[in-house]
Amino acid sequence: MKASAPSDSLTRRDFVRSGSALAASALAVGLSPATTQAAEASAVVGTKPVSTPPHPLLTPADKFRDVSRGNPKPHSLKGDALVQARLTPETWRLEITADTTVNPAIKDQPGLSTPLTLADGNALDFQALMKLAEQHGVKFLKAMQCLNIPAPLGQGLWEGVPLRAVLRLCGQLRNVRRIYYWGFHNNDPKQLFQSSLSYSQAMETPPGELPAFLAYRLNGEPIPLIRGGPVRMVIPWAHGFKSIKWLQRIVVTNDYRANDTYAEQNNDPESPLKTAAYLDSLPAKIPIGRIITVSGLVISGLSGLKRVEYSLSRADAKADDAEQWTETQLEAPPADWSTVLPAGVSSRQILGFNPQTGQPATWPLRYSMVSWSASLKGLAPGKYSLRARAVDLNGFAQPEPRSNQKAGRNALEAREFEVI
Ligand SMILES: Nc1nc2c(c(=O)[nH]1)N[C@H]1C(S)=C(S)[C@@H](COP(=O)(O)O)O[C@H]1N2
Ligand SMILES: [Mo]
Image (cartoon, rainbow, N blue to C red; front, side, top):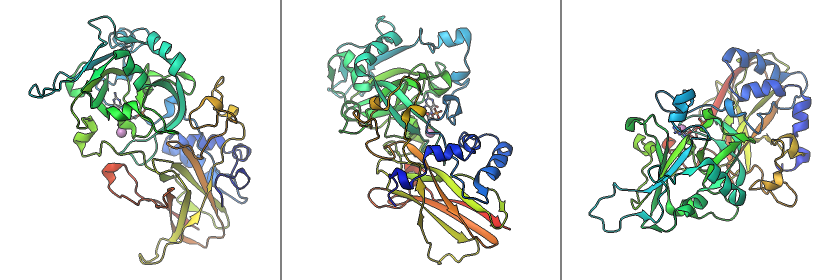
C-alpha cells in the first residue's frame, strides 16, 4: 500500500464523518482517565468499520503536555511579576553577548562586534523581532516531543525568525563555535535551564530542511505564556529540551562542547527527533464480534517514515513465536488545508510545502506527526497483545538502529486487551 495515496488512506472527511472526532481529540489531548475511557470505548469498537479517531493535526496551544521547570513556574506569574520578568510582549527583551567564562588561558576569546544588552539599551525587543519577521519570517509544522517521555507532547504550526537572522544583528562574530541560550528562570542560577547548538547548526540549513528559529506565533496566535511566549526558541530537528521557552538570553562561545543542562542528566544532547510510532489506549475488554480500530500517532523524525506496522499476538504466545507485522493506514494529507490551518495562513507559505500547489512535498512532513490506524476483525475470545512500530526511510524498523533510551525514547509500545 502506498501510504501517501489519498485513495487508500483515511481522509479527514472520513474521520469527521465517523462522528468520533470529538472523542478522538479528547484522547489526543489527554483528558482525565475517566473521560478518555468513555471516549475510547465508543471511539474504537463497533459493529461496522469506523474510521480512526484522528488526533488533530494542530494541538491547541493549551493542550500540549507541559514540561516546565521553575519555582514558581514562569507561566504562573501574573501582573507586575510578569512585567518584572519581562514576559509580556511590551517588556520582552533578548540579550545577546559573548561568553566571558571561557578559560582566560585560551587566546581565541569569543566576541561579537555589537552585543545586545539591557545595560546598553539595545537588547532586542518584540517590535524589532517583528521587523525582522517581515523579511525573514518562516512557518512550519512541528511535533514537540520530550526525549524522556513516551508520548508526543503536541504539534503546532510555529512561526518565527531564523536564529541566524537574529545573530546577524550583532555584526561580526569572532571565535564562535557554539551558541547557547536560556529563558527566564526566576533570577535563580539553580533554576537555569539552557540548551545549545553548534555555530554551523545555527547558521546553515540543508535544502529542504528547517532552520533553528525564534518563534513568536503558534497556530496563528501569539505564543501564550504556558507554551513559552512571548518568544521561544524552536529547534525543528531536536527533542523538546532544545526549544527553550521564555527566551531571554543568547550567548556565543568558543567552547566547542555541548553545554545543555539536559546533557548533565545522561541525555545525548545531539540526539535528533526519532521516527517512532505511538499507540492510543484500548479498552481492557472488548465484546466478541466487534471490529476494533486500533490507532496512534507517528512522528517522522530525522530518518523519515516509510510506514507504520502492527503485530497482534495472543498474550500467552511463546516468546520465540515469529511476530507477524501488518501495515497500517496513515492519515492522508488534508484535501483542503484551509480547514486545518489558522485563518489567513496558506499552506503555500509553509516550509516543506510546494509553494505553487500548496501540497506537502513529503508526507508525513519531516519532524511532524500524523495518525495511523488499522482494523482488527474476527478475533477469537482470549487475551491479546498489540504492538506497533515505525519503519523509517532507511528500512530500519523501530527500535532499530539504536535502542539507547537516553538518545530519545524509542521502545516498542504494547497494549493488552481481552476479547470476551
Ligand atoms: N525555559 C524552559 N524551556 C523549556 C523547558 C523548561 O523547563 N524551561 N523544558 C524543555 C523540555 S525538556 C521540553 S520537552 C519542552 C516541552 O515543551 P512544552 O511544555 O511546550 O510541551 O520544553 C523545553 N523548554
Ligand atoms: Mo523534555
